[in-house]
Length: 314
Ligand SMILES: [Fe+2]
Ligand SMILES: [Fe+2]
Image 1 (cartoon, rainbow, N blue to C red):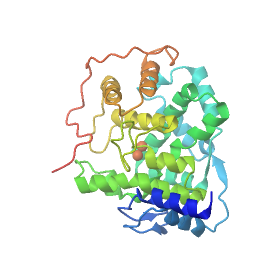
Image 2: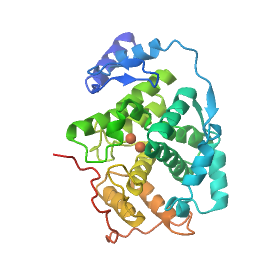
Image 3: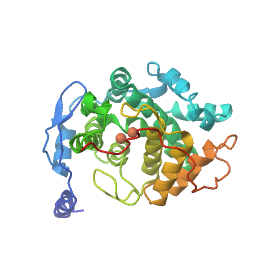
């Protein structure tokens, strides 16, 4: 490609650029980009060039602090206890997860969440475990699978840029607060681009796109999700959010209602059917995902009382 072609192609991409709603800062409070900044290819290139530190060392995620112990504990809590009920399967899965190494800034973000936002800490580990389980069946190549699932523990990295009073708010978020929360996707993209010195890094793409939907009704860009790995992480993200107690919803969805909710989202073409079908199969006792689940469209679960998931304050 000639320089002229590249400039033209960059200009085309820049016509759909994202604008930062808030600044993007590292955990040690260094501002990478200010609020209002347009995320053009030149901007992305400038943050890559600004990283003059030597490449950070990577460490095995499961060997970091109490990560493995915490993960094994979380796997025992229903409904994960049913999904991960087979010992041989869990041991296979752990072997796969032990191959995942992350650079220190990413591991430090886990320390941050473990200290200040335990919901997000648990959520990151469970989305990692669940997406690894589903990827095991849906992404056939072993090495490729490891490379791809290593992007799930950093999917919510951008939440380090969101004020804790919004992440932990116990009443419905206002529209403005939702907008602030949505910033975590682009913030994660910028942070990972900076640390990995690459804006096409898969982890950066996952951080940016994990709230996009198959039918293009998600955020931040409203694009149609097409990448299977991102679709797996997006489905696990919604499922884990539904079954977890949240600051604004002390009672979580029961498992049946959560599965019904993601089924209805698959019906609306928001979530990938293949992923939903597999998740339901793993929720059937002693199935281990081997038998393709028949999906019932009958609504038999009950939403938690006072559920305000996805609802905004006036
Ligand atoms: Fe997220
Ligand atoms: Fe998430």
